[in-house]
Length: 340
Ligand SMILES: Cc1cc2nc3c(=O)[nH]c(=O)nc-3n(C[C@H](O)[C@H](O)[C@H](O)COP(=O)(O)O)c2cc1C
Image (spheres, rainbow, N blue to C red):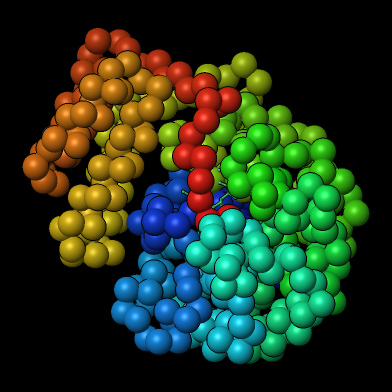
C-alpha cells in the first residue's frame, strides 16, 4: 500500500507515542502486523544541540521496515537542520508533530500551536521539505478548538508544499483526550482532502478497527493506545467475521521475551530495560484474570530476571487454569493524555 510516495505493508499503522514508540516496541508491532510505525516525538532543538539522549531517540533498528521519525519544533530553520540529521538515521519519511496539546510544547509554538496561525505554515513546510530527500508528512488534530477546525485548510497548504500524507487525530487541541474522536469529521476530511488521510482516534479494539477499515474513506488508520493492551490488534483486525482470536496467554510469554530481546539490543542500560519491560507487561495483562494482582507483583519485583519470571508464571497459570479469556472494555478511559 502506498500513501503518496511512502510504502506500507498494510493500512493499519502504529501511532506515534512518546516514551513508548522507540525501536524495540515498533519492531515488535511490525512483527505483529502493523503496516508501519512512527517514532515518538523528538525535539528539533535537542537534536541540534547534539543532546545524546535526544539523538538516541532517532535510532532505528535495521530490521524495521516502514518507519517514520517524528520531530517537533516551531522554528523552520531549526526543524530543517534537525530533519537533515534525522534523515541520516535512515527513516522512510520525516513526520512533523502538529498535534501535541501539552502546555510546555504549545507555549513555545510547537505541536498543536502550529495549527493556530496558518499564515506561516507554507514557508515552514517548504523549508523542511527542501532540506530533506525523503518524504515529509504531518500529524495534526482537527483544529485548535471546536470553533476553529481548520484541518482542511492546513492539509491544502501542506499539499502545496509537497507533503505526502496527513494523519489526523479526531479531536481538537482544547479537547485534549476528552470525549470521543469525531469520525464524522475525519470521514468528511478524507472525502475532501487533496492528500491521503490517515484517520486516528479511539480504535481501541480489533472490532472497531475492522469495522472502520471496511467503511472508511481514509487511506490508512492509526492505532495508538489499542496495541498497548492488545498487541495482537493488528492481526486480529483482519480475522474473518465470526473467527475468534487465536492468541492465548502462551503468545504473551513469547512476545514478552521478544520485546525483552529487542530492548536489550537497543540499550544496555538495565534501568531503561526494566522500566520499559514492566510498563509493557502490565499493559499486556490488561483484561486477563488477576491482572491487578500481577501488576502489584511486577512493581514489587527486584530486577529484570524477576520481572520476566513473574510474567512467565502469570501467563502460564492463566493457561493451566483455562482462564484464557481477555476482556477489555474499549470504552473505558485509558491513558487519557499524550503528545498528539
Ligand atoms: C502516551 C501517549 C503518548 C503520545 N505521544 C505522541 C507523540 O509523541 N506524537 C504524536 O503525534 N502523538 C502522540 N500521541 C497521540 C497518539 O499518536 C494518538 O493520536 C492518540 O493517542 C489517539 O489515538 P488512540 O485513541 O488510538 O490512542 C500520544 C498518545 C499517548 C496516549
